[in-house]
Image (tube, rainbow, N blue to C red; front, side, top):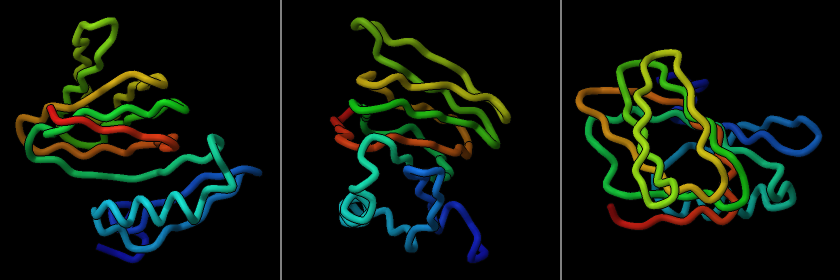
Length: 131
């Protein structure tokens, strides 16, 4: 991957229409904690732009209480599952499709083969739970 790979170097969109390339993504919780500290001044106006490739369903649910998250499928097929009013609402995304996870809505994703997505996440206060 190149030095410009979104998978390797996510971008932070912040207040004042700023965009800042982030350090190399490690996938570790410490990376997210450091990201939160680096971007704290943007509060709920900040968004993490990231890209992930999945080969299997997620093993967790996540929820972003302070803002929306946009999920854009770039390759393959992803089935996003949102927990709305105690019901699981499934949204199938194919390349070029997008969906919005509203604030406070728990969501997870199923992938049968390989799929890649771009995520614009208002991550302040993100919570996770086992699936």
